[in-house]
Length: 200
Length: 200
Length: 200
Image (cartoon, rainbow over all chains, first blue to last red; front, side, top):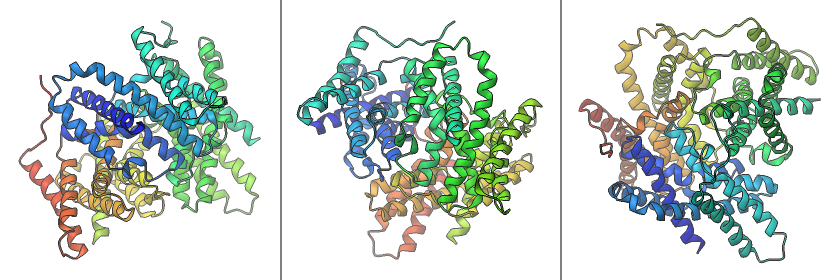
């Protein structure tokens, strides 16, 4: 079950990378690299910072195959991918829910403080997109427009709140992942965003 | 004593991140992340390169609290922060003096060559700002305008020169930190900068 | 023999960094840093991702001296460097051939899958230039224009194909390095590039 979600999240992240790279008129290699870093960048940064190396996608070939397949698919069907936009958004949202909770649990097993664990979870979910935007010479979109990281942080707080209650572990996992997903869906549906704090 | 300097440096770095992020019209999350990477980015890169993981701010929560507090403070008082510009500049300068020497000593304890230690010290002091500028889609300011890194390098050379003399360790620490601070203050006061080497 | 190639490659990479940094009107420190990251960035990223720290240039001072010397040379003779453009291009091409194979062998000794090893080799050869372009606020040139990474990937595939045959190891090393070099030379000579996949 978790594995299927992981697959869907990886596909959604890779395709989002392809779309940005196509827009920047990159060549086939550039597109593949951008798809790759978007899909695995957040988890890689997390693994490097806590010292868990070689990083995880080097030890499980399924990521490489999956990203390669998604990239080829997205390039071939790039004109029709608009029809998939809703599904992709849903995969992506489910993906960040999962990645947030997986990141938190990596932090816990490295004996880190809850605040740092929430940071790691958020980083796992969001920094693939940040690295994608840096490589494409853009200010990272999550720093400006979307309630993306905020959803992850709220999910992380939920995780540590709920894990105080006498519940089974899987339930904690599911409920905090769902908080991430629901916050993001509600925010996008009702066009809620963080204030920019900038004054003219 | 060192701890107070560390606190002042972290505050100054975090606030400098907030000011840049506000200028780029980032949202609250973006501002917090930029403040964070500006404050801890240099030390994080140093720790990752020498393999000291989990990186230090993950093991001492005070950094996270301090950066969060400074960010909230800087956002609330952003209109009045001009009055603090001189104090901030001083904190920042003291901060890079400290970070340079701390970085050098980390390199020494990892048995690295003095030149590499000076590099690590300079990186600890300067690369938070470099990562901040990359995330904000700017050419890093220290590559273009300021005698910032040069001050760190001179402090580092002082460190290894002075440590040849029969002095107590603390004195080496203080004198090389002071070289960083004085070089930077003098350079800014008299508008000294490195030549750009570019010919029209 | 390998050592001489490594020296030529490091010089070529460092000088390519100097030329980009001069164009961006950086000061002396900025130029040196850009030369440094261009020369060692790819190998550093590779070492960090597989957890081989402290990274290699910290343990062998020759890299630092070589890069410093090349930078001083390139800055002094920057007006005349056009005469060297062909030699530099050749050094650079030989360099990526070597770095690709060295990266692959590092991956093999870390017990990684062939596909990941090819990825590591390509990263060793190409990501110095990627980091250089990010620091200079450009979209990395290898994502857009050149058959640079493709040459590395083809060399990597050759490595694993040839190593199935009953040959001595050195021969595998040389033949796959030569594939990288020849593919790049042929592609540049006949102006072959990957399609951009972008439709107007």
